[in-house]
Amino acid sequence: MQTDSLVEYGSRRVIITITAIFCALLEIVDSTIVNVALNDMKGNLGATLSEVSWVITAYAIGNVIIVPMTSWLSAQFGRRNYFAVSIIIFTFFSFMCGNAHGIWELVAYRFLQGLGGGALLVTSQTIITESYPPEKRSMAQAIYGLGVIIGPTLGPPLGGYIVDHYTWPYIFYINIPIGTIAALLTLQFVRSPKYAAKKAISEIDFLGIGLLAISVGALQYVLERGQEDDWFTNTTITVLAVTSFFGFFFFIWRELTTKNPIVELRVLKNGNLRVGTILSFILGFGLYGSTFIIPLYVQSTLHWTPQQAGALMIPAALTTAFMMPIIGQMLARGAKQQYLVALGMIIFFIYSFWGYKVLTPDTSKDAFFWMLIFRGLGMGMLFIPITSLSLSTLKGQQIGQGASFTGMMRQLGGSFGIALITTYMARQNVVHKTYLGTNLSMDNPAVMQRVDLMKRSFMAKGMAPDLALQSAYKSLDYTLNNQAGVQSYMDVFLFIGVMFLICIPFVLVVKENKQKVKIDMGDMH
Image (cartoon, rainbow, N blue to C red; front, side):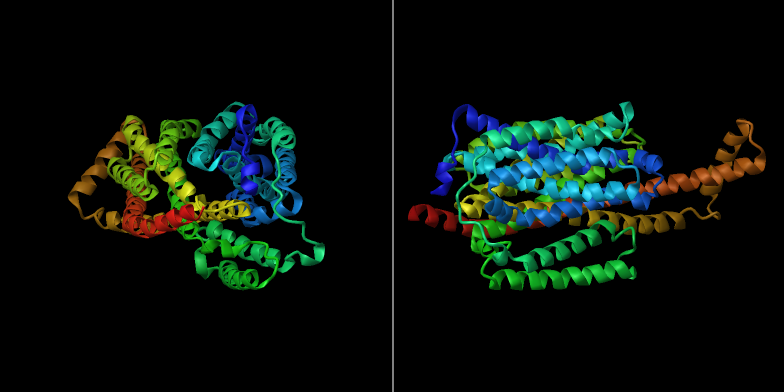
């Protein structure tokens, strides 16, 4: 009933939708745009690679801490005010990031920017969902989905262009004009639902806030830093993993027993939302995992520039953009969500298996085109059905709570995906290197012949015989490392593909049952 009063029409709805999408885009682009500027930051701020990687980690931790609290904060301060303040915090700390003079100053500003940014993603989803009448919600999710899917893809080419043509602070400064306009439009057009009276300070669940911040922050740190710090051989990682586990345990206990919980876990009694949160996790894994792996491969193995690596992903993003309204229309006409998700997962498996087959130490640019088109198709068929299924049977304040859960699970899915992929790749790299090394014995005549040919080639360029022999061995070692690296990337593609394939029966069986819940609730109306 409260929801109906928030439905907008005409130009007002268009303005609100555009504002919300720009805010979602701002947040997501900012999580990936930094990746290509780390090298410049490292040199400019005199930081180590380990220190500069905190620029990404701090933002992600700020993001994931705030996302589950957005629904409560919206109710506490009014959605319009909370959304506008979040945009202002995000924009202000974007400016501060660009002006940072030291690495830890930048890391602190990125954390605070992440606290502002986390709200943009989830609140913009809720605003768009509630601005459209129930029968047009699938189309609303399609429009919102454009920002979420295109965002991670847009970051690297935009960041690459800015770093190549300007300096790294400008990757933060571009947020300022967009953020300022978005804040003004929010204050002018967005309306706040009247869900409940504000809680008194004494009623605020400060213990819940503390437990959530500690457990999510610790988990995000473990996922982001685990591989680099050698997982559980590192004391900090072990302590934080245990902290996160017990933090979540006591947080869940607290939220289910307190009168005014900061996160309403009871909303997960809704079957559709429960399945939707699991699928959002898998979607995040595939979306962020594949966005992470492809630019990494083309830059480290094929030696492309950041701008070229980012541009490679554009056709896939455009395909997804093209698919979104079509899928929205299909859902509006009664297409079953579980079938679309299953088909999306099959297409994503085809893309992953294709990636497994085409990767070589010198794959051409053309070889990626159709493979990435399939990625775009798969993502288009997964995002909207999962999101609309998650929120389809929620009403009023529950929509914001549901959006918080799916948003957090998508972020965590991405973090888990990247952590798992980097660990798996490091392990597979060692396996392949060992296997290839055993075949490169100096007793092997073919190997000796190869070394001799390379030595002669270097000598022909004017090198002394001993230097030429050293260069031949170095060249052979480089080839071995490169080949082991490529095989590790191939393994990752196969791993992601098989994971999506395994999920298909689960999607068809579980969601078929949940669909009945949706029909029953519809009948109750």
